[in-house]
Length: 158
Image (cartoon, rainbow, N blue to C red):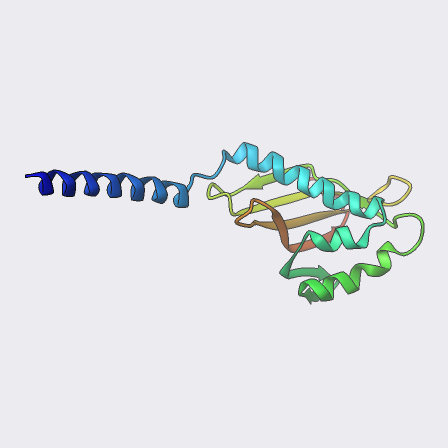
């Protein structure tokens, strides 16, 4: 009888422990509004690297397999993007700036999108950027896709 009680107790403890471990592994992502706010702040910090003239900090936001679209070509990989963007960090002042006005995150909390205006040094809007970010296991966002486009007159047509 005692063996049956011990077996039952051990089985109950294992079930509870495994259930808790499974819940922790599955873990619910924080609410998407919180993640979107975090992603917006991350994009803001990424943009600040240009203002601060800090190429190393810029590079730290890139995923290893990032793809940036520049003109008619794709720049693939963290090292290639870092090298292609290095000239933008030369000199005492930034050649352009950007800021997010949109941040959205999938319900899974794994991918997010940021978008917003790009400005010339005099503050004139010269384009729009769109970036896709992936959230890693530690909660850090890394940019996986980036594409900018020139500003346009998007007046409705009749």
